[in-house]
Image (cartoon, rainbow, N blue to C red):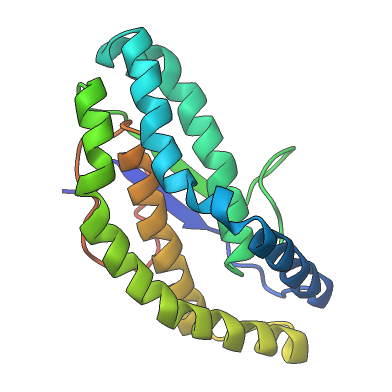
Length: 193
């Protein structure tokens, strides 16, 4: 059974060297404000719990869910850009990102907050894989600067990391009830039927 979140990205034929330099600058800036970005993992379930508390789980999914998913889409686009998957940010026109969520479950305030704890095993594994991913990213960046492209296998690994993170973000936001799979899926996403 497929996970209720879809993430894929269109691989550019050629990566732009200028975008590689811009990524480095953005990552340096983000490094200075790293603590608030790290709080994203804690903030998403708390914000979801607040929204669920204002209504109920069904209304959260039906009324707030589309806004939450659009917000996650912006985060997903930025992460895909920084992860060296695309040279274009999402927004304003055609997006290189395919991000879809089939909302499910009946979230409660308690279940939203409990996701902070239940996501720890997935975060630990993702963190370990991301350590390797940092080296893959650096190698890919050097390839882009030298030859304006990098191997498909490295790109697939980075796409798999971002996909895992996207699944986890949707779970933390309580828009899906299914726990993210413990799998580094580096292949293309299945096409929508």
